Structure formats: C-alpha cells, structure tokens
Length: 337
Ligand code: AKB
Image (cartoon, rainbow, N blue to C red; front, top):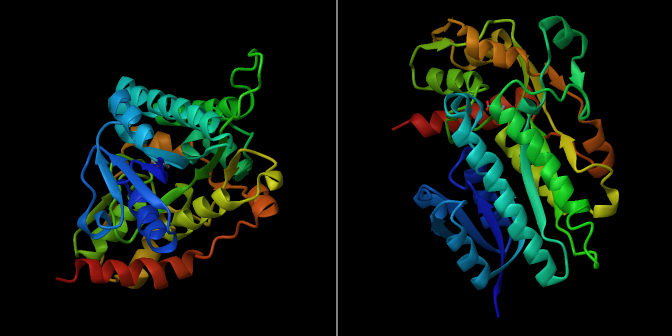
C-alpha cells in the first residue's frame, strides 16, 4: 500500500519554509518536500525531503509509485525580477513545472477516486495597472479586474491559474467518461514579509530588505520611489490563508482564485515603521526606473472581500501587530549572535 502524503514543492523558498514548519507541527500527515536545494536542518527532521527538479518526470513517477498524494502545495517558482532576466527559464519552471504537477494531480485524482487538492500561490503580479492615475483611481482591485500583467512572472501566474481551473473543470471534456478532476485553489498574495527569511528575486523585496538591513545595522538604498504603494502581508497570515483555503468546504467556494491581503503601505510608510523600531536605520531612496515601473503596475491594494465572504478570511496581523509582535522581535533575535 502506498503511504498517504502531502507534497510541497519549492519547500526551501520563503513561503515553503514557513508552511512546512507549520504543517509539521500541526498535522500528523506525512510531508514530502521537493526542492532543488537541501532543506534547512531545523525543518528537515520532520519531513521526507527530496532534492530534485519538479521537471524530472522520472523523479515524479517514483514519487507517486511510493506515495498516495492527497494535497499538493505547488510553491516552486522564479519570482518577478529574476524572471525578467531569464524569461524562457521562468516560463519553463513556472508554467511547464505547474503543468507537469497538474497532470500528476489529475492522474492521482483518477486513481484515488477523489480529487487531489492543488493549492497554488499566485500574486499581485497577475495585475497590471496601465498608469499611476489608474492605480490611484482603482485602489482596491477585484480578482477579475486589470488582469494585464507586465512581467513574465505575472503572465506565468495568470496563465497557471487558468490552467488549474481548466484541470478542475474541463479536463478531458470530450472523453466518454467524465474523469475525477483535481480541486484547484489559488491565492493572489501581496508582497510577503518574513522575519526568518530574506526574499530574493522578487520586486516587492524592498520592504523586507529595508527591515532586515535595519535590524543588522546596515544602510539600505530603496530601489523604488517613496510614494509607491502596494499591499503587504506578514508570513504567518500567508500560511494561515493557505491552510484555511485548503480546509474550506468546496461548496462554499464561489471562485477558484482569491485575493488576500493585510495592509497597504507606501515605501515612505514602510520606512516610518522601520524607523519606529530601528531609529538609527539609514534608508535612502535610489529608484531603479525599470524595477519601479514593475511596482507601479501593481495595484495599491487588493479587494479580498470574496475570501472574507466565502471562507471567513481575515488577516490576524495588521501593520502594527506585524511589526511589533511578529517581525521586530523575531528579526532582532535572528541577528543577535
Ligand atoms: C515578487 O516580488 O515577485 C513577489 C510577488 C509580489 O509575487 N514577491
């Protein structure tokens, strides 16, 4: 008999590490993690880690021969800035990687006779505001508005959302028998901020980079203008949102892709919060016009009322609580040696 398991791809990334720690503590499910990198020691003990590529079909076949996968958190992706340097590689990892896993989940759903839950983090990068005036006028963007991404990463996320919906609703629609289809659920996250990891390769990274630099007593040159505004969320809320969406009864879900958010800050507001806790912080603003243009195309805020209505989504960490209870104390102890 195969052992039942939850699969987490991209487990060494920022969301991955936070999610794995939480799942390892809170559930008795067998956790299989997959990443190109080894898992950090503090979480490696509680999971079965496979170091490998999501595009390695042989590896995935061996995986399903040993485990009955009932939930997949597909977190592996190249983020927005990194994807602009290598767009073809981004497409390969972000789109083809997702397609391979959706196919695996479809086959597993058929075998089991019940849908595999496929949980997919999407992003504010799926939106594209054409100019700053529109960004100001449409502050809280709803899921179906302004779906005109400016980056390869945003295009990849938007298309993979559509692929997931297709595999959940229309896969093999011309076959004689309707297959048991997977259950795709996705969250469009704002910029995420973790106390324990520093992001790399993203464009919302200026927020967490500013904070982590201040905690280490290092100067920071912010690569966007002071007035640029996007939504953010503390990592514990991102993990809670993923788990709550996973657990939500299917009949409650009116959509397969939901916005979630917590607080919206300009880069100057972000600096003020950092200075409140680290008054010696040296922050300057040296906008990089090209990265700036990407952040300008992202909405100033997200409307997450559908998530609130359907599965009672509410962030637990507003900006005050994020900084004072989660980010600052944990970051201080992280850099205290
Ligand atoms: C990035 O900056 O690419 C990510 C995102 C907004 O999805 N943090």
